Length: 320
Image 1 (cartoon, rainbow, N blue to C red):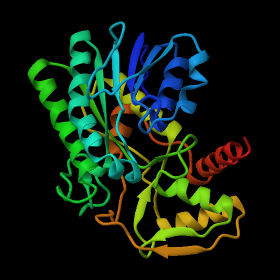
Image 2 (image 1 turned 45 degrees about the horizontal axis):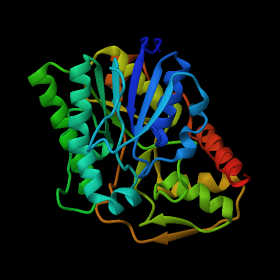
Image 3 (image 1 turned 90 degrees about the vertical axis):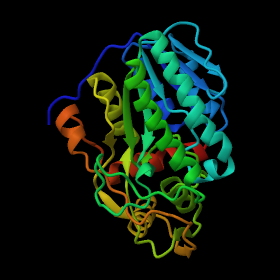
Image 4 (image 1 turned 135 degrees about the vertical axis):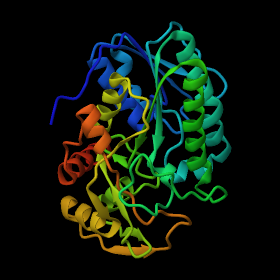
């Protein structure tokens, strides 16, 4: 595998930078020598995620709702638009906010990039594929999405964001890129955010039953956060418009994931089956041929190693 493409950035604006993936991006960019302005309204982001970054030169935290304003004190050369509730627990609790962030927030971030002559990267999602009738999913697949179901506030916000990003590039010549992220996991996830990995880890550490929805045979493809960050920055540096899938093509059932977490934790937890959510996808697996061929990127962290790191982080948080 060839070396992932890199590029030197001077000033990067990261919307949603206090969130799970966003905060890891902020740290990686600071490590690379960029100044970073994190814009977050903290509706789902956590102050703890950015607390260590506040002590680092070049980092600025701005609390603002990107759907209303994007107050930045100097022009960036890269805008990473990662603001959005991303877990079912959050977007079901904040449906209108989710849609406004995906529409008005995306427009504001695009305008900042256009006015600054900056590169723009939209964090889209595998949820644009809905409950796919094609597996694995490549970027040419249009998806199978319920536009009025409970998940639609997130799915359709991201689909609209992709359409708006494409129109902005074609109308204004904005330098844009769309990355579709698949099921990222790792340290800094919230234990009660409703996603499988933090839920299973939290339950296993507490000795509680692991709640597997349906028969547990639905699949996901889990990408460790360090790999996701590397893929996003490679796409930003490349100059491609995308969309491009960033995820791990290793598919696992939710039942197998629950059993793996129990084993890695060394827990005596049992598995309890609960009702499966409406419109829950049966399969989720990225075709990453484009990312491999164009970016020289593929995930490096395997599921056991990534889960061990995640479990260790949850243990350390519980000990504080």
